[in-house]
Length: 68
Image (cartoon, rainbow, N blue to C red):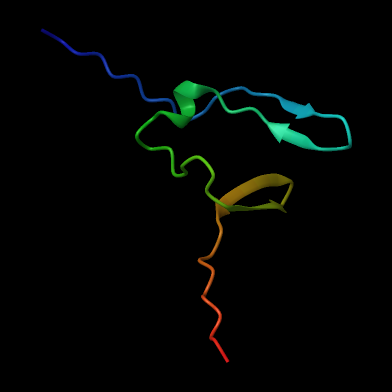
């Protein structure tokens, strides 16, 4: 029996605008469920514009504050 595995490394999507000026980038489930997708739900990310491209990277870990 053959098992077909589809990997999705890119997808056409939409930028959605909500009331109050908020925006959201819709990511298709086949993209985020791909084993190569680098993020998980509720993970903090850094979003920046670099040379006309939108770059999304994992946020650096937050260091615990020292108690005084």
